[in-house]
Length: 409
Image (tube, rainbow, N blue to C red):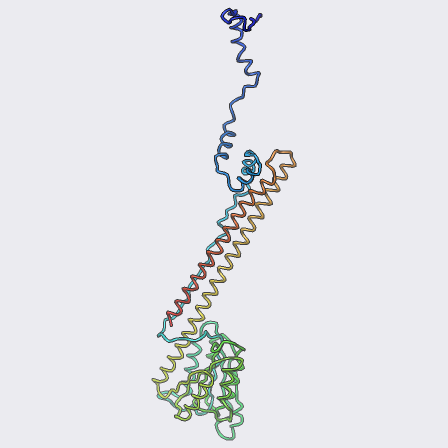
């Protein structure tokens, strides 16, 4: 086949029509042979477009500003996706905060919450006498039972009886004055304490000072005045030569810092004043019960003191529980987020190294590390914000508990 020659001197209008038709037939083949690009794969195009349309994160912008190519950054972004699908919300549970169950009262002001109570009961023979419609011993047992029933949960108590040996004659005095018995050592077992109270008898003399000393020995060293209390139930003054005022003062101002409260039964003025001095030296109260009505008033006062102490204990337990619950949740969040960071980092880099060893073309490793670090820094910030919120919620709950306790006074 002969092609027509083309140059500036030869006008196209003189071109051989056969040659023109031949060129027209060859043109599609020539274009194909020169590498005319085929249409792009639709899925690849859509993926690249989707990734490119997402805004670059701060870490990605830093990589780009540092000279990384956009293609590598997008490849690094795509690489970490399968390894960063962990549900982070499971790390951030809400702590169960609670209030306190408080008993309403009559508006009196209470002291510190109780930590130990020592009850000392008079076992002298004069306790067989009567006050109103009941014997002093019956009232003493009832008062002791009331103390025990009113104890806040978890507060231990002991029961000591003094003078419950020998008899109340001169012949039995020595035995009786040495008769100090711990019927129930310090315990939270209220049933055992009440069973011990039922065994108190009216027998001998009144070694009050020795009874106070034995009760003190059931207490612990304390720096908080009034958190330990001795309750004395008696119908008379010291008859064994001891100095109960000095012992009470030592109990109150010494290592135990305990308060000595005394409930007396049917005491004449002089003896009542003597026991008032003992209670005063011990930093406590003295109540003389001379009829059924005064007994009820006395017990109401002691029950009120118990109520205030129980409220203080209940509030303290609630606040401690809130501190523990919040601390546990924050600790769990730290552990959970730490596990996520370690697991995602290890699995992503292990896969990267494996694929690189097979010769696959990947984004530079430092870019993978940078994007993982950005995600994990955000997780750490979320954990810290959660910890701050949990602490604020705990403080608010405990403030509400304390306000409720004060309102119940």
